[in-house]
Length: 323
Length: 154
Image 1 (cartoon, rainbow over the protein chains, first blue to last red):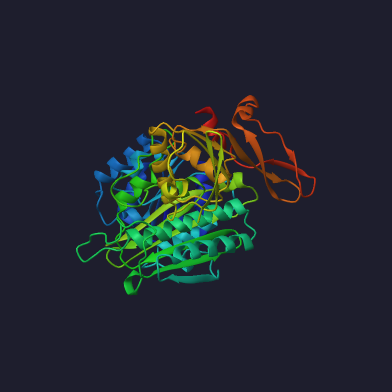
Image 2: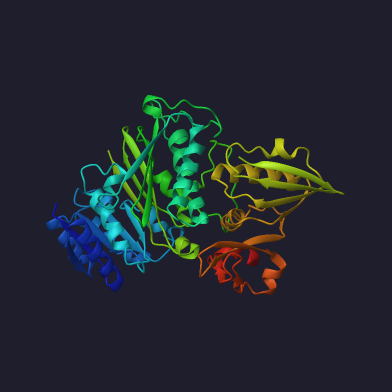
């Protein structure tokens, strides 16, 4: 594998973004507008990271078909973890990406903020490490990381309130602090109730009411990491089960209820809308999961001058799965 | 955790919610038997999580199905966000008034102003700046209009 970032795009702003990312992640940028040329580069040079313009379904299908007819969709030369789809569309409008066997990372174009390339570059660098676990690998080097271990389910609310207070102290608007707190609430709830599975892979607490008492001992303990580098806040929830299901996750993330009705599910005690709501409120996600071992879900928010900018900030969904 | 203050005004039962709505919420227990008319004041609801949303929809959908007339008043920004994100969050109830967020250009204070939904419609969703109550500066609407007022045109 080379230390290259391959960009397949003709969009000028993709180029500027990729230059920043490559520079931060210590990669050499190679650009081609043609998928045919890109396939040759993938086959011969195995770039570490691939950014590809998938603004339309036709663009995606060209890539999909040409990979299928050359190196193959499941080849070691095209790892989902290293493919980043660049798109103008909201995630619910890109079902073709969500359902793609190549899906690894989705970046919604909004590169106005000059810091987004550097921010995403740290994530790309982290994703290239052997195992991208720990918030420190995803933040600007030297950012202080605070850790909290949740040992009882009821402690979740205290952790959520602590993050909210931390945000207010860091001079985030109170509405922004509330959005971040809500995101942390959803992350911790999933780690406490949805992540634990038994030896057969069956969920242990998914059907329990979310106000149930659970002692989170040994493997069930949930760790939370929080960091703020002056621009971005990152919060990670860590569980030691590694049970995250990529298809289920992406289906939840892309579901919206602005047109269709939300139906209260009879199965499971969760609501199934938490992460999607966080994404639509301005949050970006980095999911890292090693099957049977650990899952880390990190949410990022940029501090902005106004709530309007906060909600409309640069967003992405990054998934890194290891088997 | 959310608290409830209940008040009776003729046939109307007025419920004032205060606090975050999350997994501990039990509307059945807090509100009790369903009256013919429910007015829910959401001014003091700073946050609602996904399980809170689920409990909310379950309760108010049942209330609506049983013929209770529901009106939501003084909806906080957290509640307005849910009304916009989830098409059936208001469960057939009327959104009478909402808080609209403003941000002062001078001192950066966050402010909210109460607006009736009917007035918002008349204003064509164009919200003029208001005077900051802290420094006297000009405070502008601080959200994405098409999103924050999405429910008005639905």
